[in-house]
Amino acid sequence: MAKKGSMEKTANERLLEFLLEERKLLMNGIHEELGVTSYSEVNATNLNKRGVTKEKLCSWLERMSSILNSKAIPLLQITVPKAAKCESLEQEKIKNQSAIIQLQEEVLKKKDEEMNVMKQAMKQTVKNEITSYASVVTKTCATALAPSNIGKAVKTVVERDERKRNIIVYGVAETPDEKLPDKVEGILMEMHEKPTIKDCYRIGPRKADAVRPIKFTLSSTDIVQQVLRKSYVLRSKEGYKKVYICPDRTKEERAAFKLLKVKKKSIEKAQRQDSSDINIIKDIMSKYE
Image (cartoon, rainbow, N blue to C red; front, side, top):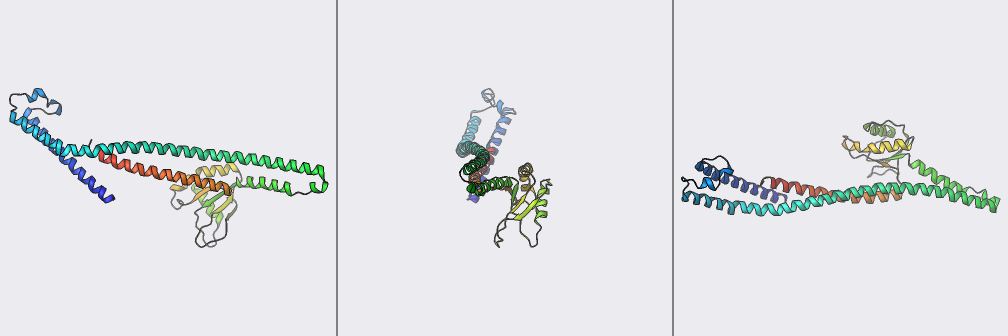
């Protein structure tokens, strides 16, 4: 299919070159006969000069009609539909760009909502557990002394706080007797970051056909956010283009993020295809201008 398109383009270029050469030869002859040097001087006044014969005018008109009918008209028949297609693709590109911006806004909104939900859930969990504990105390001393409910609430709050100080790294090859802290430090150095790394280990059991992600902890959530913001630089680093850094998300957060990522890739793929088509059409049209 691509080969056929290339052949058609070559044929169109040959047609255009022939048309331009024919026009040049004709106009050069007219300029010489009229004693002028520009197209604007080929006007009624100069064409009515005494030296311009009827036979000359008829000959010029015949050649001009031949160029118009056999070369110029076919080129216009090719160009006009492609111009309409180009305009349509431009509009579609703008539409896709708007969709991507909207999707990015949805991702940011989703993150804010998740953060607010997490804060509210934490507050509500602590409040419910304290209320429950106070109610139990008023009933029986034995039940009040049972720490299970309070322990569960405290554990939930602690786990959420710990997640915010964690980072997950994907795409780092596993090697025998590997030193994970050194590998992670090397990745962070590529981003010009030197934080203190804690609890660095791979997640899940070892598998022959899969590379396990690395999980490590930093000293504060501010440092985690700083590292995440600069993680994009790895895409341009040789040897790290397949390394991906992300927050320590819950199962529900990972599922929601995956759906948004799939939708974003689909829109970007459509946009890239449209841009390619537009460039091809513009390249062809530029030769007819």
